[in-house]
Picture 1 (cartoon, helix red, strand yellow):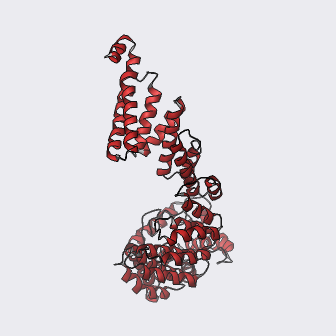
Picture 2: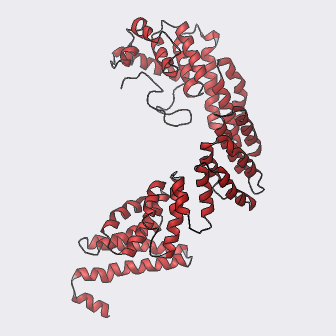
Picture 3: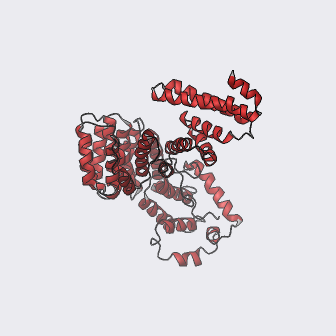
Amino acid sequence: MRRLVVCGAIALSGCVYYNGVYNAKRLTREAERAEREGRTIDARDLWGQVVVKADSVIARHPASGYIPQVQLLRARAMARGDHCPEAAPALRQALPAATDSAAIEAGTFELARCLAQLGDAAGAAEVYARVITARSPAMRQEARVQYVRALRLSGRFDAALAAAEGVSDPRLPSERMVALGGTGKLAEAVVLADSAIARGDTAAPWDSLLSAAGRREPAAVSPLVDRLVAMAQATPAMKGRWLLADGRRLLDVDTARADARLVAAAVAGGSSEFAGQARLERARVALARATTSAALGAVVDTLEALQTVAGARDEAATLADAVTRVRAATDSAAAGAPRADLALFLAAETARDVLASPELSRTLLQRMLQERGESPYAPKALLALHQLDPGAVPAFDSLIAVRYAGSPYVAALHGDALPAFRTLEDSLSAFALTFGAARQPGADSRGRPQRPGTRRPVEPQ
């Protein structure tokens, strides 16, 4: 009764505090208690009530002096309710106007947590740094652990190791392990890894360790992969994933060992998608090494079989179709077919962009220049070849300046978009539909964006 009497005797802004603000703070305390007691469902419900109560106060009394603290309560409640996409900007807006130090620390901690959840590890590290000296021991400890993790995730391995010094927490050995691998101290990382392997800890951040260390020394992490695969607790999917990643890392340094790892991944991975991806990776390697269209034939059966295998079916179908089109376009019987020049150029493009076989693409572009040098698309092939391999045509400058000087493609290279250029491109695009080479603009065979200019290297800007 006394609170209601006082509320009736003072200004309306005072009632805002004794009603809306008071209830929002009360609900916040209840939500925090529910979290401490492990009543997760109750806590989420209470945080939701905080948001509703705060929205009501803000809507009814936008000019009240209590609005900044209500906005911070609301933003923090949104974060605790796992609405980080909305909570992060709300916290950034509310924190500068806050004056209560405890509320500021709590809001700052939630902002860091949300940034980490949203994938902004660097931003999370910057914000966690503000609360690693928080007054609350529990918040201080958690902030320190999460600060180390955010530094590690953002690739600041040395800083992560420094931040972990003197902090005791069962989660930190794993963070140190990855950070050590990322700084090139693999031997020290393996000491920590051995302890985790001995207890069969498959939940440790093994992928992060292998990736961080593998970027520095691809071959050096293979023995660690062998020990992980030997863990009795490792599932076929885990084994396949680790071996597949190891094989991919080795492709640029030791192709024989890389192939052996991919074979092992296909076997150890069982029926997992990683086993299928390993088989597909071997097929990709074979395609990339192909120097003639005939060499593609050796991969066709594998691609056909992979079209029913998890982890490989979609791309295997795309690659099989591309191989079929390239072989058909480059077959000797197709040399005299109508518009064979367009088919040959599109086959070269497909070899480059879909099969990832630059050598085969170079061979086909050279063949087009030799066999179809009078084609209006020969200058386009010349420009594509020069972009692929600047040394492939020693006479490039003279060909551009003399033989193909009047080509719309050469004009486009110099920034002049002639009407004939658009006519040629429209004809090529129309033919591509019948050839089957048309793909979603701006994407490669895996649906990933291409860098500007790879699909049509002489398209005027």
